[in-house]
Image (tube, rainbow, N blue to C red; front, side, top):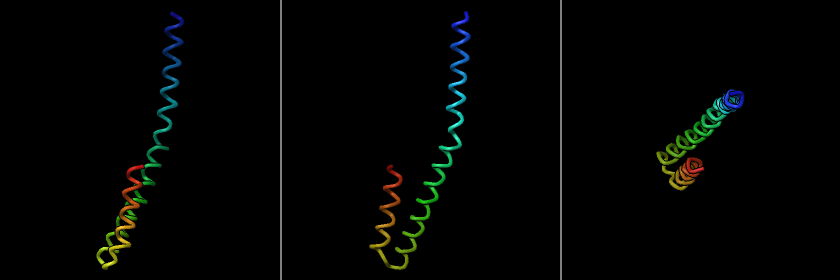
Length: 68
């Protein structure tokens, strides 16, 4: 019985440590999303102004960030 209780305690403690990393992961995602969104907006602006080479460069960089 002691082993079962000890196992349950250890499992609950380990779950708490994993739950603590959620905010860090969310912040990491939010940072990437804002960078990607900025590149997307700059790429659209370059496209609209006729600078298609710059637009393509910016949009490809945004896509590569999505894939990583």
